[in-house]
Amino acid sequence: MYFDNASTSFPKPQAVIEGINNYLAYEQGNSQRTTGKKNTDMIYETRKKLANFFGVKSINSMIFTSNATESINVIIYGLLEQGDHVVTTATEHNSVLRPLLDLKEKGIITISWVDCDSYGAINASSVIKKVKENTKLVIVNHGSNVTGAIQDIEKIGSQLKSTDAHFLIDTSQTAGHIHIDNKNILADFIVFTGHKGLLGCTGIGGFYINPEVQINPLKIGGTGVLSELLSQPQGLPLKYESGTLNSLGIHSLYHSLDYLNSISIDTIGKKLEKNTDWIVKRISGYEDIEVYSRKNKLGIVSFNISKVQPVRVSHFLEEGIKLKSRAGLLCAPLIHEHLNTNPFGCVRVSISHFTTDEEIEKFLRFIDEIIHNLSNIRNIKVPQVYETPTIYNV
Image (cartoon, rainbow, N blue to C red):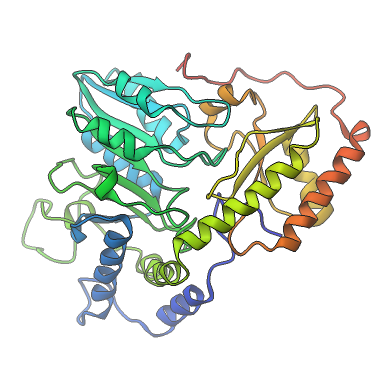
């Protein structure tokens, strides 16, 4: 059983599998390089589908990268300069934290942190209070990969309209689970990855960039066209897409977006909300279980069992019922201070709309067994570990 969809989704829709198999078997050439335009047209049509999906007007402002981490690096290193100030949150993934702290340690930027509650939710009004005259960028994780909490990015975007700060949202966990319409959000940057809720392959991601915002590209080189230019083309998307694109990954999105539209995002979100509510209510009934999630449309439920390290619980699930989950700090180390889950983090199960009621019930029955045998499996001694980072010591 697969309960780790927040890491990468499985299974993929049959239409996606068939589409990429046909691509590998029958498609030829390299986009904008090999004669013939079928592959190039497919890439453009996928951009168009993504622009519609995220509610943006400029098709060529949808930029392809290898994943959300690369997209975030392009934006952070391409935009921020000496003396800039950044506002971000305690819920961020290391794909945001590490580039920002790299620039902070080099003395280039300063950072203000917005904290969260014990479920990973931030107060939208707290963001605007952190903005200063030199704030260049505000970064908000739309949906927590640890708790499933969804932030009110529409309210944040509306408040930021009165400032000069640019707004970046990370939709790695939310894209494909809830509607994202930039006409209401007003983000300058929307980062996405293809292999989670968008149900595509690994190795493909990207970002939307407001065409009125200029940033430096992370890499420059061949673009397949305008070869006579010895400097990087400045038009979009070429400015940010040097090198051969991941046509296979893009092709997977071409088909997965059709699939998502055919069954509707609302249908997916409602099912995940219903099933996370079921799981949360069931395991919250035990006094030895602490739950860090509310019902949510991301399919995420995180918890701990008293005096049992989370990695051991994940091991029990794997060994006992062949259920794949994840445990630890989950690449988001700063949120755990607010959940009171330092230093070992928590157990995370993350379901998809493919997850069956029978699988959920089997998981819940096994949690029952763990609780009933708790006296035999609790840690005898919790070891000392390194100090974990918080928003107050970074």
